[in-house]
Length: 255
Image (cartoon, rainbow, N blue to C red; front, side, top):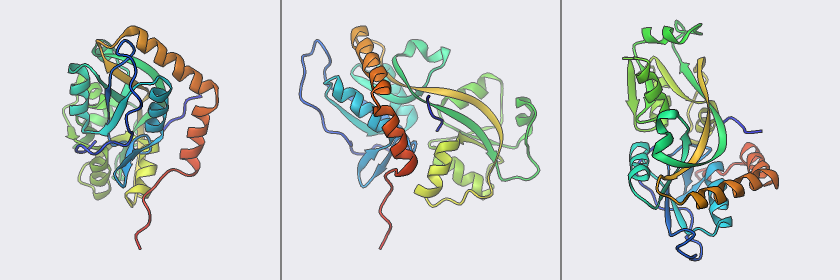
């Protein structure tokens, strides 16, 4: 069962594997956003449960690659427009279907709405959120697109989710959207006090994918999907889930 669970450019975490014939795949630049515990950076190395899953997937497929953290909007644009690029973790939406080739799902995630304002929520309907002064959303993310499509005019877009959570805690925005799993991990990773936050609405449950430029070989996409399915059956997937639930990599405590 799938479990529920960005920032400027950084150095890569994975070294390219040995070269393979161009008929299978050339070097692929893989992008991700800063989205712990799925993808984040420790001491210059990109880690995370989705990072490890994608790394193992491409290793088994003998695809030379490099993983790099990038802002969501830039990573999305590069993968959509430049051959030889990939991006994770992407929510699959009808309006995005033709933008990419899809492999997954990698995992499922619930998008929640949070607040520190005791006068707000819990809400009985989505339309009630229109009365809030501001709703923090990730710039270029699926939640921003979804709410804009419904005519919401009180959205405040931010380049990364950590900014949303910090503004929420400080009361600078009334409502903020994000992942429950990420929020709990952020509390530890970034020393963020979230004791005052309450979830007041669940927006949706999303399945997250690894995406490739739309001109990527369909045969390669099918092979990657088969390998991912095998990883979910041979214990690899479950071992990663257990690792990040029980002992996720975190920065060393300062002396």
